[in-house]
Length: 148
Image (cartoon, rainbow, N blue to C red):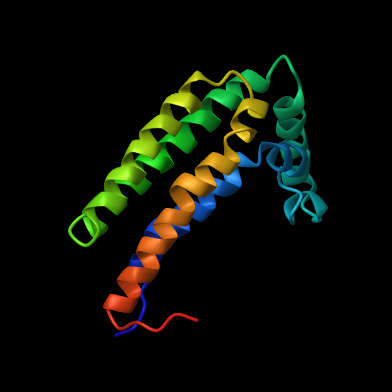
């Protein structure tokens, strides 16, 4: 049986969300991958303006609130996927992940700046990403799907 993108969704969403906790890299490297190095001057000029606002103290708050909304939405999706896919196979692990996820959600909602979100990165990794990865691996082994 082949591994599908749908099978990978819970762990992929964890990895993507974990990347969002590295707020310093996000703020400093916004669109530096290709767009700001490219030759599309119109797009580049517009994104430079966004990057300036993103890093300016006066306008950063509008981005921060949206950033929190994205992270909390992702965590909610992760918890939903974990519950629906793994609760029959390992209810204790699922229960612990959901409890930890709710705690992290509460902490994120109380944050006031990007640095406070950065401070939650290790907790998210240890209490959400790694346990979800373990469940993912167990599920793949039980399904006879080979993972390298």
